Length: 78
Image (cartoon, rainbow, N blue to C red; front, side, top):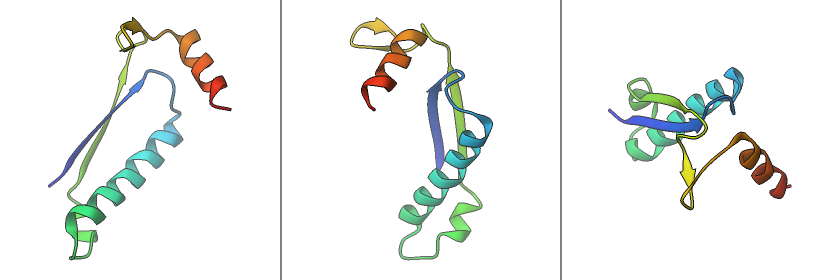
């Protein structure tokens, strides 16, 4: 049975987005791993955990990510 562990910055996903992420990622992983069998049997037994990591405990390029840096990175993607 697959175990999916997703890490995100604390407070960046709403409860609705977390729920959608769990549902969709579970479906895709079960679909890929179960081939050629139907995914439904594996999907029922696939675990998915979303862990929220505090800002300052997550870094990129040698620097801790701050809420301001995260917001700026989202703005650059637009």
